[in-house]
Each structure stands twice: as structure tokens, then as C-alpha cells.
Amino acid sequence: MAPADVPAPPADGAPVDHAVGLAHFNSLPFAAAEAAFLECCGSLRWAHRMAAHRPYPDLGALLAASDEAGYDLAPSDIAEALAAEPAPCLHHDAPRAAHLALRAAHAAYESRFGHTFVICLDAYGPSQHVDQVLAGIRVRMEHEVDEERAVTAEELRRLARSRIVELMTAGPEQEG
Image 1: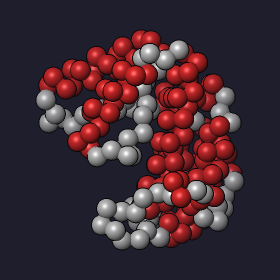
Image 2: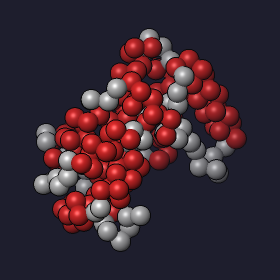
Image 3: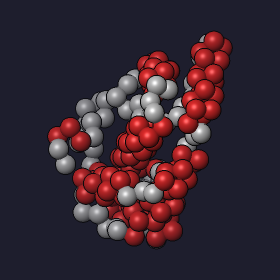
Image 4: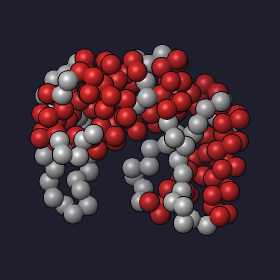
């Protein structure tokens, strides 16, 4: 795993022992692992493949397997994953105008491309999310369908990686 691919440490600077969560995860029954992977990416084929290839020796190997499985998804698998994705939304306390703008932008995107807009916001703080989503939709509305299909697939892979890291750092007592 390249240094840029290593997940950032927690905000408090404490090191994270991914191996504890990973060891527990590797020992889960197949159905439980598959269900957990489905929470990371809504493609049953992807989740099945990820669960079947356990045990993973370390987080880097798990993330590499996630990327590889993501690159192998057929258009129908991507459509299945997109159908399971919630649209990025705002906190209920956000101004009404922001909610309306986001709803309108999502509707325009879905009308053009036929699926929900997905974006990985890991690089941004919560206060920047709405701006990043709106800017992302604005830029991506200019894409041709094939270009947007590729960008969407990459965003799904990034979301899956982020969710896997979160899953592995949750620890056995927080996994459901």
C-alpha cells in the first residue's frame, strides 16, 4: 500500500490497531462477514467475493482486495451498489435553503444519469460536505455518461475503502 493509501490516524493522534478488528472479522461466519461487506458496498457479488477471500493478513491486503473486487464489477453490479447508496444529505438543522438546493441538485443528477450521486467526502470536514456535494454535482453534470460511469465507480470504490477502515477500527464490541 502506498503511503497516500494509508488511512489517516484518528484526530486525537492515537495509533489505531487495525489487526484487532481484522482478526475478529476474519473469524466471523461467512454470512456475517458478507452482510458486513454489503454495508460497505451494496453489490452482493462484491460482498460475496470479499467474504470468500478471507482471511486477510492485514488492512493493506484487505483494501487491495476491495479495490480489485471493485474494478471487476459488471455494470449490473455497480447498478446494484448504487441502488443501495443513500444520497448524501444534510443534518436536519441545516438551513432550509441548503436542503432545497441539495434536493434540486440530486434530482437533476438522477434525471441525467439515472442513479443517485455518490461521493466520498473523507478528505473534508462535516462543515464542508454540502459545498463539496453541490460542487461535485455541478462538475459531474458536465460529464458524458461514460465518463460519469467511470467517476461513479471510482467513488464507490473510495466509499467501500472508507467503510472498510471504519469497520475494522470499530472493534468487535461495536460491530453489528
